Amino acid sequence: MTIRVMLVDDQVLLRTGFRMVLAAQPDMEVVAEAGDGVEALQVLRSCEVDVVLMDVRMPKLDGVETTRRICSEPEPPKVLILTTFDLDEYAFSGLKAGASGFMLKDVPPAELLAAIRSVHSGDAVVAPSTTRRLLDRFAPMLPSTGKEPRLTELERLTDREREVMVLVAQGLSNGEIAARLVLSEATVKTHVGRILTKLGLRDRVQVVVLAYETGLVRAGGGHR
Image (cartoon, rainbow, N blue to C red; front, side, top):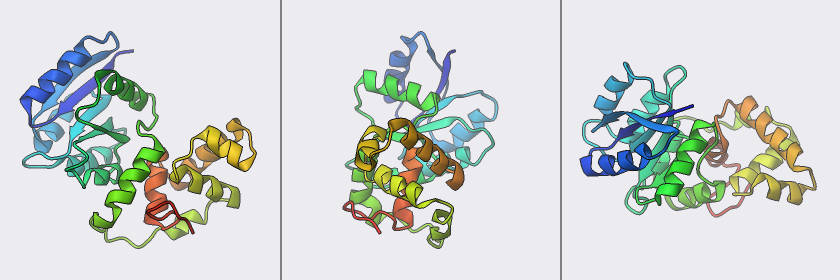
C-alpha cells in the first residue's frame, strides 16, 4: 500500500527536500503540497491524503489551527507536526489540536520516513518521554483553551487504568509499565487500549495531553 503524503510548509526549498526523500521510497508518494494553511485546506477537499507533514509557522493560517480544522473532519488524514522546537513554543498546541506527533525539521531522513510509516499505521510517532519534556518546558506558556478541567472524564477509568495512565504520561513504555506494576506487557497494552477507548483519545500522545490538562500529572513528573 502506498502512503499518500501532503507537504504543508511555506518554504519551497524545504518541501523540495522532503519530496526528494519521499520520492525515493517505494511505499510513499507526495500527492499534494501547500504553502500555507488556507491552501492546505482547499487542496484537501479534492485530494486523498493519508499523512500530512505540517509546518507550524506559516502565513494566512498557521499549522496549529490548520491541524485543528483538518482533525475535526470525519476520517481525517494523520497529521505530523514539524517544528524547530527551540523557537516554536506553541508546537505542543498542535498535539492538542489532534496531531499524532511532532518532529524536528532537521530530523534525519530515516527517522522522518519511520515516523510517517508509524503515523500511517495508527501509532503516535513521539516517545511519551519526549512529549513530556516538551510539556514540562512549554505547558505554562500555552494559551488556555477556555475549558474547565476534564476531571470527570477520568472517572470512567478503573483505579488500575488510572495508574497505567499516570505511567504512560510520565514517559514509560508498555514494557516498563509492566515491570513497574508486575503485569504482562499484553495486559498493559489492553489497559492502554481501554484508556484510549473510554476517553475517546487517538493515541498515547493525547493520553499525555489529557493527563496534564486534568492535573493528573504535573510538569516535572509529579502526579495527583
